[in-house]
Structure formats: C-alpha cells, structure tokens
Length: 280
Image (cartoon, rainbow, N blue to C red; front, side, top):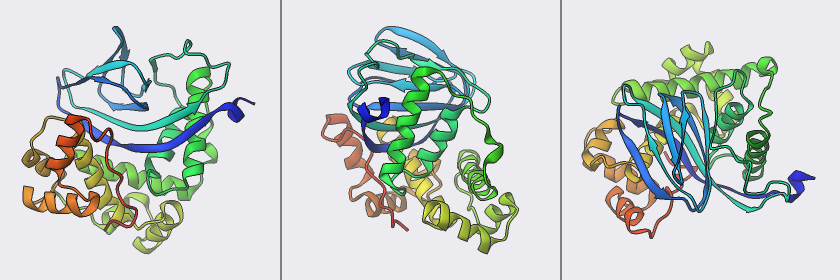
C-alpha cells in the first residue's frame, strides 16, 4: 500500500566525488531529493542549523526546501557517492517528521546494496527498475530496517561490482594512468572476453566504455560541485591537458565545462548534465 502512494521520478544526476582533507561544500538550497553515501572519510552534515556526524559508511538523505552543507574529513580525503531524484507524492504515513538526517554504517546494509545498483545504472539502466530501487531505499531509510543477506549474490554480479569498485579506486589513486581490459579481468578473475560478456549483460556496455564514462562523470561532478579550475579538473580526472578535456566534455554533454559551470552558478542549470548512453 505504501508503494502505491509513493510516486518518484528517475535520478536526474549522480556520481562519485573526491575532496581533499579539510574541504567543505555548501551552503546550498536543496531543490530535489538526494542520497549521499560517505564511502571514505568522516563527515559532518548540517541541515537547517542541525548538525550530525556521518562517518565512513553512512547514508545521508538531503531533502528539498532545506539549506545544507558538508564539512568533509579534516585529516584525510573524503569520497562520497550521490544521486538526485524527485518525489511527486509520499505515502500519507510518511509525514515530514521522522526523517533522520543520516543513517550510521551497518554490516550488510541494504541501503548500500541498492545505492550500488542505482549508481551503476544511472542513464544506462531501465528507469522503472532504478526508480523502484530508490523507492525501496526510501522505505528502508525511513524504517531503519536495512539488514540483508548478500550470500545469494551471483558470481556474475560480484565480478561486475568488483571491477566497478576497482575502476573508482584507480581513478582516485592514479587518475592519469590507463586502465586496461586485462587489468580489470585480472581483478574479477575471469578472461577479458568473459568480462565483456558480463558487463554487457549487467550494464549494457563494455568495461572500457565504463572507464571513459567514469572519468567524464567525475569531471562533471567537479565542474558543478567544486571550486577547482578547469585545468585542475583535467589533471584530477586523468586528461592529458585542459584542451583535450574540454573537447571530450563538450562532445559528451553538448557544452563546454566553463559554460556548464557558469549555468550552475547563475541558476539556469540545477543539476549535472546526463551522460549519453552511447558515449565513447
């Protein structure tokens, strides 16, 4: 009955962002709903004057019509994943009260499982299935019933998850270094040909395209959610130079990073551009 009353829109944007020690983000006025997963670093989240700790592994829910900000870890880098989505209607039982600002880490957390699912299918998966996963996240987040048994996870989905994590980790640690198909297959303990089949079945794209998409997704996040210069963003995301980065960015999103940044700042663009599914 609750899900019959819950009407969501698919994610409008999302990605993974990396911040240096001591960085901050905000304040900002929220217009959409947003889930944030603190993957690395201990964070302090502020919402309408209320502050909560969000240690590594926490899930934060940012809601519309609030003003919020983040104090990232002061001693080490912070990495977080996020996605924005819309809510047309909520169940009557879900009044505005009762929404915690953050949920602490939990072993076998259903929220993390669903978050991974949504993150790997942004702009590439079935919108209805992704929206259903977000609905399940909202229900689990509100109720606090988040435990799950991961032992039934298939070997196929495990291999894809391992490689996705490996790609994010490599882009964090050495963004300028290439990531080969052989490297990714070795991580998953399968042959390169079999890894391509697994990725095509799970995500509808080969591993190499996911690497290119991950670089662009990361770059788009930094363009719209940081004060780094375009030159710094090109370096942080592993592009040879700012000219090459700007060209690839414009090819993917239709506008240069400088134009997108200005639109975000003047309010004419409220979220990240969507990366085309067939981007190569």
